[in-house]
Amino acid sequence: MKFLYAVILSLLVYQARADIEYRDFKQPGQEQAYQTLISELRCLVCQNQTIADSNADLAKDLRRQVYEMLQQGKSRQDIVDFMTDRYGDFVMYKPALKLKTMLLWLGPVLFLVIGLATVWVLRSKTAVIDEPLSKEQQAKLDSILDKGDDA
Image 1: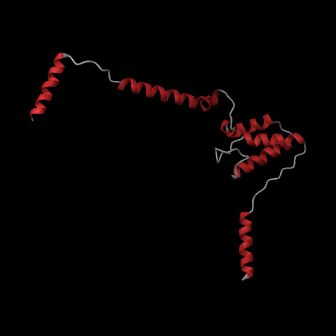
Image 2: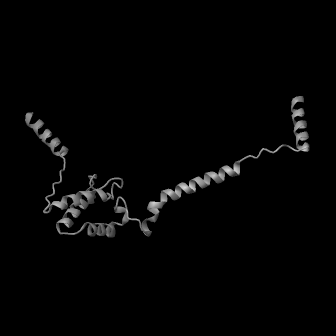
Image 3: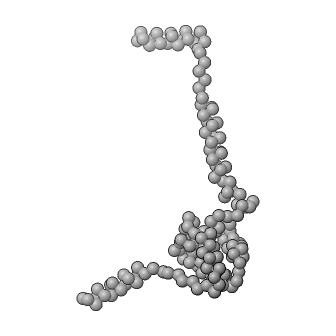
């Protein structure tokens, strides 16, 4: 029975293990460049996390790829260019401001302006203007109200 408990416990421990990635850098500045890059690249699976924060398999592959490119002596810009060429500007957590990404940067402001303009137009159309009734309209209203009191 103790053997069965030991087997079950070892299976549970194996499942609960944490994957720790260790990277050995040849030059002192590479580790800082690596940390900066993985915190600037978006996980394409999670989309709201950087590849540094994500545990998705794609994020692990991207971290490995960034590490290998740094080990090959590629610059930060080379790696960013490679990633954006391969995955598009969306891979950057803060994409560069250029014509293709203008909607990403100005979209929220544009939607806010459109929303405020819509609210303003709708309110101005539904505004009731208080004008006094003409004598004929007042007489007609009085006659309708008098008929209602008689009933």
